[in-house]
Length: 242
Ligand code: APR
Image (cartoon, rainbow, N blue to C red):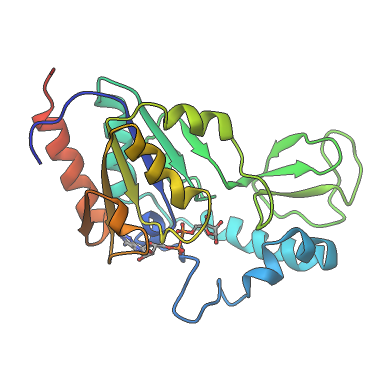
């Protein structure tokens, strides 16, 4: 790319950025999410119907995240470096519930779909850092009540988290980077429109073109672990004060 204008950058990431770290993406070829239909594990109705199944699903994913083989990859680390070195704000919004951005050096992460490493008391709203398993009979560490802790995850049909920080991130970017998302889930799929409306250059990174590619200035096809570090390196070496 040509010499970059230094200005705020907004980055949106999805499951594709964590794929090379060994975490499954959502929309696999079989239409299942780690063997489950989304409606069975990622909706408030599913949780009301069978909390044990839903807890089991997220317990399994939390355990997987703690597998020593699951580590941030070069794309996570490149974003961390960009956040530390870019001389204007870099806002990182992720749809991912893993903590690989943080472990890859990201300074501040907006988790719009929640976080696996947290649970929430459904009655009080208190959020607790969580490392192990959680079940319907697990007592809330603060109130001692059972049956109230749920995964701190945004399920289908629920409102996203951190809407104000997202609005702020999309208020004035000069560059919008969208990495490893299928663009199938609202509202994240619409962020490119907000960024474009503010005049940002919009670049998509994905293995293939997606259903939202047409809204970007360009799509860089390939594995994020290769394309993102190369892009960031070029951005950092070509940055100049306008
Ligand atoms: N590099 C770049 N892109 C990749 C890679 C890779 N190594 N591997 C996969 N991808 C792309 C796929 O081509 C696909 O477009 O990542 C995208 C992953 O899409 P999804 O699995 O649909 O994930 P995402 O877009 O993050 O899903 C959004 O939907 O299920 C809900 O709440 C869940 O946050 C999730 C949301």
